Amino acid sequence: MAGLTKKRKVVAAAMMAGLFLLGGVTGAAAMRTYQQRQLKDQLEKGPGPARARMRLRAMRRFLDLTAEQESQLQTIVDEAETKHRELFEECGPGLKELREDTEAKIEALLTEEQRATYKKLIERRHERRGRKRRRGHRGPRSGTPPDGPPPPR
Image 1 (tube, helix red, strand yellow):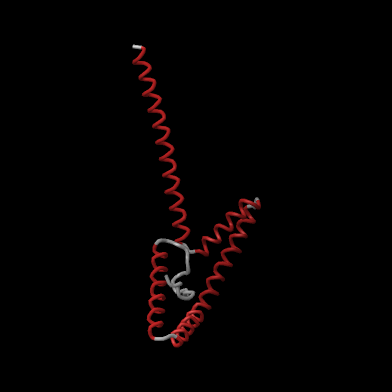
Image 2 (image 1 turned 180 degrees about the vertical axis):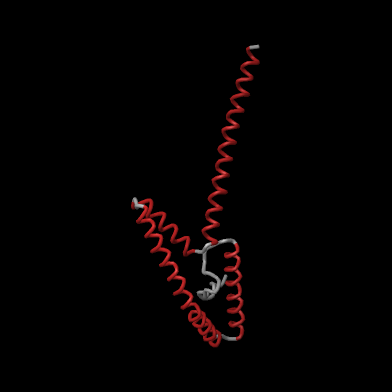
């Protein structure tokens, strides 16, 4: 009977260790899911609002802000983000025109063979950017002019 009791103690200890381990794994998985959901929400709102939220969070953490200061800072940051978006929208068409003009000049300089390779490089860059956006990577928003062809492989 003494052997049976010792065996039960070992089984109980193993079960407790297993439950502890299972709880840790479950907690880690839940935290990861929560963090991924938060990150996805931030990325879907775009880099500007995400940048503003991170800035406010850091200021709250390091500056010991009052509720009044926090409210005023929120207003200031929101206004700045709105102005930033407006300025970008004003410049966007001009930047697109500049890019198209630059690409036309580059293509005029190239030989027929080089032009074909250049166009393939441009297409490949657009495809990569499209894949990155679908996966949720930060990058230029839709309508943002690209910044030149990717390097050849």
